[in-house]
Length: 373
Image 1: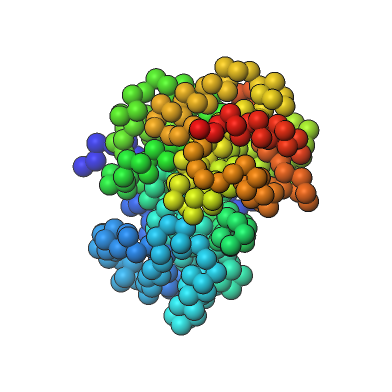
Image 2: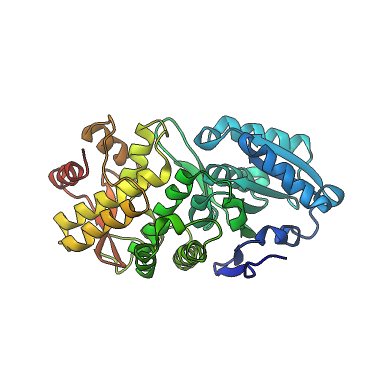
């Protein structure tokens, strides 16, 4: 019998509400989430998780007994997020006679969730999808909110759609074998949620020995739940990221992009060798420095970005080979840009995000120099 509390249910209250279950044993709810009438289940899973997929299928024999199960094996990481991989998945669904009443299940990290969600969104103009994230990053970010996408040669996630899941199962037991550096990477999105909306997250990180943030840790569970609630609240108010405007009282869903404008640029410049969370951590420090120059963000808040992120082992400065000019060019084609205007989410203070549109190149360069080494 498990010694862990029952999974917590967090409802994402959009027009098509769904539940996110967080805790050990959440995966047990998978059969109950599959839509009534479904005959086929397509499991999108990266090659590296083949062993985990076998364990899941062995644990739930009813899946194979009650459904025609098709495994869509995809490459690991960002290599999966291509039009070619999506096309191969579509072909497989067609060969299996996959209909609109059937269901896709994603089992993997954020890239798997993005790609699998995109395949579900585009097959027959949309079939049901259940996300089973296996990394901390995917649990608190990619699996919640309905954003799906693939990459192109020009940039990250530039092709995609909004397609909400029918449910998300964040089983913390799946984090047991996650490499430490991947867990740390996921903490970047958790800490981001603390800066934009819930400073109690920052307090908890500062009060907890980083070595105690493990899959079995009550502190990690609380951090995950808090981060998901932040995202659920933001998404419920602005699903398709249409509310944000420069000078608006709140940027809406665009708030969740805090740290991502530079983060995506340096992630792509590294050929995705830099983990998403590592890139976002640097991006968060960058926009804090930018806010200090353009809006007078208090120096103590800027420094807190560095101290909290560094405390868990995340980078706070950029030492890659890309130049400022190269990164500026990449930021100019970011999804958040409007016309020729680069937009950033910055803070006026803790939990007070605003949109900064079109900062001067001098300010952009000065902030970059502040995070360069």
